[in-house]
Length: 91
Ligand SMILES: [Mg+2]
Image (cartoon, rainbow, N blue to C red; front, side, top):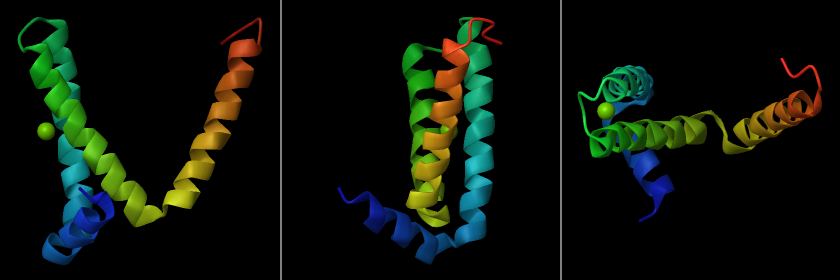
């Protein structure tokens, strides 16, 4: 399955604004699922389903905003994280 084809089709059908809104909604659902899972109120599969929703939306928005720019930002953050891990003060 070609993700880029699906991302493009999604924009054509519902528009960009709807995708931003969907991202917010899916993030909220994942936050709620994490709390519910902590308390034993939902199953692991339900949590994974919500994680999959957010992962798909991350892919969609990454594609919309520019995969190269997002990749650069991730690299930059990984460098910062690596430095933090090497810091003996580690905070
Ligand atoms: Mg969801």
